[in-house]
Amino acid sequence: MLPTCLRLLVPTSILLLAQPLVAADSAVVLMYHRFGEDSEPSTNIRVEQLEAQLKHLREGGYTVVPLSDLVEALNGGGSLPPRAVVITVDDAYRSVYDVAFPRFKASGLPFTVFVATDPVDQGLPDYMTWDQMREMAAGGAAYANHGASHDSLIERRAGEDDAVWLARVRADVEQGWRRLSEELDPLPGVFAYPYGEYDSPVAKMIRDMGYLAFGQQSGAVGPGSDGRALPRFPMAEAFGGLSEFRTKVASLPLPVVAVEPWDPVVWTTQPRIEVILGDAEAKLSDLACYVSGQGAVEVEWLTPAKRFSVGPSKPFDEGRHRVNCTAPRDDGRYVWFSHPWIIRHIKDRRHADHHDRR
Image (cartoon, rainbow, N blue to C red; front, side):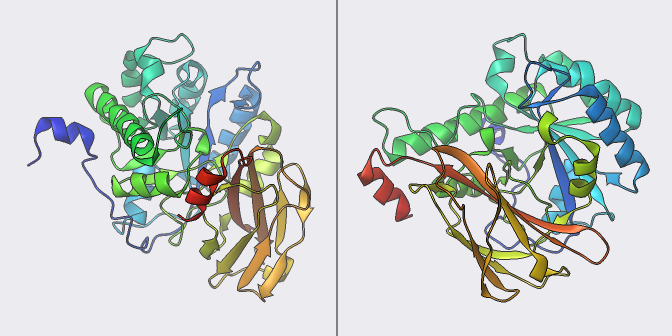
């Protein structure tokens, strides 16, 4: 048995993510941040939007399941009901307790908060307290690791080489798990990247630590989903309307076998990816892809219904971007795939070349 100090550092249920994800049904994972905080529209969902969404989940034939059920299914230990939905919330803002929790509890809906532990420990007024989170745990809330500092994991500090950078990131993730374990009974083996940002070295490290990781790119989760960066649908004011919500929550995963290049961090302003597909029950001839800030872009089929290439039609600015690809099914639902890009300007060609060789 591991000594107590090591049990705090290592999730108690290790997922063998180097193995393919095994049979499970699909689920849509929703990601929220703030509730009823109109001064923060980019991460906030308005109260009336939330209430309409919860009403649709209750009345639309969906089953909201705990995140632990999805983890178990992806890890080969169970199956999911049709139209399964998982509710997640990032960061542990105070409005989760004040606004969301009473509504989730009244609807009997389980949810998981990915907690950034440093702001909670610092007592920042915008965040929940540990006592409030313990109260929510008795009412259906679960908790999982979001790291300690909420710093971007892909950002190197001045003078850091790869070894120092990754050691610091690992320590931050371990500290987040340690504090959660000291205060709560968190869900092991699950991690959410701060800001949804990751690259290949970070994703490998998180996987090797035994975590199933979630990003912030859109899409449903299924048996073939890549456990290094599982998709979630971000919920915020600009895209929290009921019509859009109905489409997203009914979506299914596009069966993606491989993406090349997979790493979202790139040193070009017009990146492209090639996507290889498995068998899909969808009208792939109607596959449409949309790039953030640019709308619909051309899809180049390299092998009909099996392999396509897509990229932006115009150069990106530095920062986060993504492409969303969807195709309709005969039953009116859509299969969905999203890939993030994090554009870096070439300020250090040596570092860019080193990263590309990964």
